[in-house]
Length: 170
Ligand SMILES: [Zn+2]
Image (cartoon, rainbow, N blue to C red; front, side, top):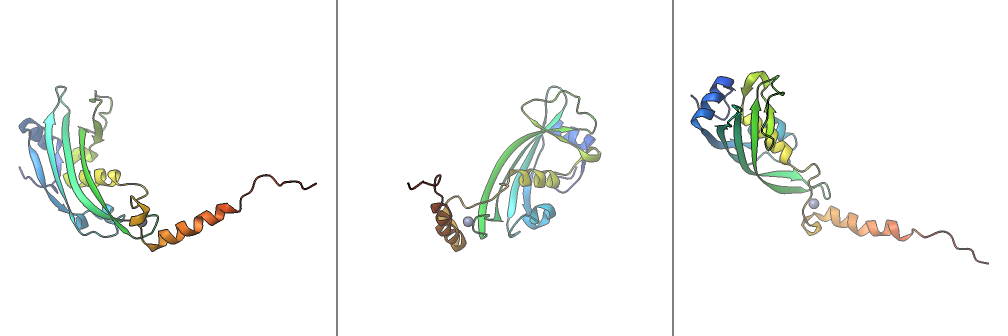
């Protein structure tokens, strides 16, 4: 059986992996993940990942997916690049299409296999995209580029003119 992160694994393959408690691990270049690339400032770098397969008592195959990477995003406050460190571990129950009524281990998230097959690289890409912040920003404004400081310097002025109800001078 090939141990590639790019291979498509059938339900039969996944059963074998689970029974052997197999581990697939390796490194994927960010530039190979085309959907992810669209949201990155730069596609330099790679992801270290591992998938540990096992089976729960009630037959569903589960995979422990772990991945670590650092990606470059655009800060939405200063529009300059920022490095986002990502380190995640998720436990996913793999389901055949149409088997949603089966008993799923409640503590796990479930993934329905398209056409009954699993591609580890595609699963990793999905989970990595989900783990990224919707609005990336430098943690502290001091880390932001000059644009954010200009905006912050201007912003208080907008509010200083707000007054209470007009006073009557009798
Ligand atoms: Zn920033």
